[in-house]
Image (cartoon, rainbow, N blue to C red; front, side, top):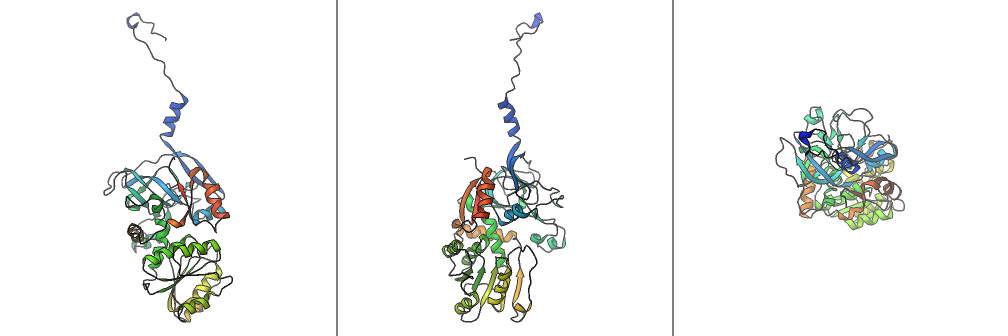
Amino acid sequence: MPRLPFPAFKSLVIQPLRITPTAINRSYYSTMMRAARYYGKEDIRVEQVPQPSVKAGQVKVAPAFVGICGTDLHEYLGGPNFCPTTPHPITKESIPVTLGHEFSGIITEVGPEVEGFEVGQPCAIQPTLFCGHCAACHNHAENVCHSGGFIGLSGSGGGLSESVCVNATHVHPLPRDLPLEIGALVEPLSVSWHAMTAAPEINPSSRVVILGGGPIGLAMILCLKAKGVSEIILSEVATSRQNFARELGATRVVNPINETLNEIVLDLTDGKGADVVFDCAGVPMSIKSACEVVRPKGTVVNLAIWEKEIPFNPNWITMKESSYKSVLGYSHADFQAVIANLASGAIKPSQMITRKIKLENIVEDGIKALIHDKNNQVKVLVDMSDK
């Protein structure tokens, strides 16, 4: 050991400073975290990003389970679409951005000026971003804010990371006995629940048709059952999704390739037609089919996001005085309603979960599985735990 050359301090020994790679890594990783980042078409990378710091009015959440959405697939295959290429008006961020907008988690920190939340509390995140001052926001329609976006698509973090800080208004507490993987389904279920608000006439005696048996169409079955609807007809071409629909409670499943939907609906409704039709397919034939099978004075509700313009003849609904409505996203009340129905057992969505994967495998086992095996997959969840 080296000693100081001063006689008065002969007994003082200077310990050499030991800097090891392990020590450096611990310091580095205490301020960094893993996240799945979207860079552009077919370019998603799991990389290290800085840990976020909680601000006033926010809580920090450790995501538990994150659903991969059809929107994520569209971003991967043909984006950027929702992901901003210039600074987003609310988040001020542009790609690369952290993905993940369907997620549950555990609160790990509560910021200043936040009441009603506590560390360790399970929650689901409502990812809607809104400005609060445009005409839509003033009309309590934050889901269609003129500058709107989504946590997990538009910047300010996302569920596909080890931590995310969100405004407390986005946080919905979950019952402690509700599995967190079920909590990750609150967001897609809320899309379907919100669609029912466009058809307030729905009641247990309603005859309802759903076009498309993807995740939102299947979630629509569960929400209608929670409302007590007993006559649910679903149109879907894929055999595996037809089977999912039957398991979840559809009373009649139609394959429009070899069956005539309009004839079947008229037969099942004593010639009247469907009271409400939910278009979850978003293909040119679905909108025409919806208008054909709806009854006079009935309602067609569009949930689909259309990739391009299509021909539409208003006479399809004018001659019946039917209504055509569209919905987007969800509201705070929709999240609350879905959570209440999950807690009571009125909605039982566990069969929607067809695969769980780890973050590092998100592209191969998640995105690509949903693209190439979409008929056999409904909801793929990313398990964010270290186990």
